[in-house]
Length: 222
Image 1 (tube, rainbow, N blue to C red):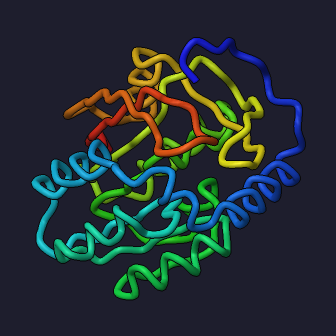
Image 2 (image 1 turned 90 degrees about the vertical axis):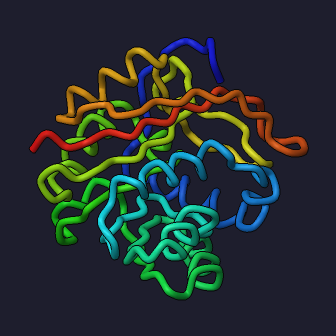
């Protein structure tokens, strides 16, 4: 998606979320088949775990099938709550990681709905929102953290705002920023960047284009 130009959102938020959820309901297990090797994501979690206390409370935002992140966190002794808007993805996550708790909820209501966490992980979930909603969500994630809590964020580098793209046989809407601006969005939301990683990624099989993945580990300033 790198190199695409910015274009403003024009779709009603409620209909947009329903369409996104339905697309991922239909994608189901094909998501993990298309993205079998998630080294950057796994390594970001390994870095995060070195910053967390034993038994840390972690929120997995846009948990998908629970693999690999919720599973990896649970194996390390974390108490994990995962949220997603796709019922099918949540069912798969419950099967894959029965030790975690999974709830159907969207990112914008997370701070009001849950307690405070030692960490929030959001791998390739915020990119499903328009830029204005990402800018609303990042500060709310900070509010959901204990003082000095941690954010692990994965995004795809792209200069786009809520554009429709074909993805694994479905149409989804995606957003991104160039890496320097993405970094600034995290800082503006009240985080201090601790580590950053950039990966080129080629999904397995057709239906998902190559991408540049951005990973940030950041600490809450509040």
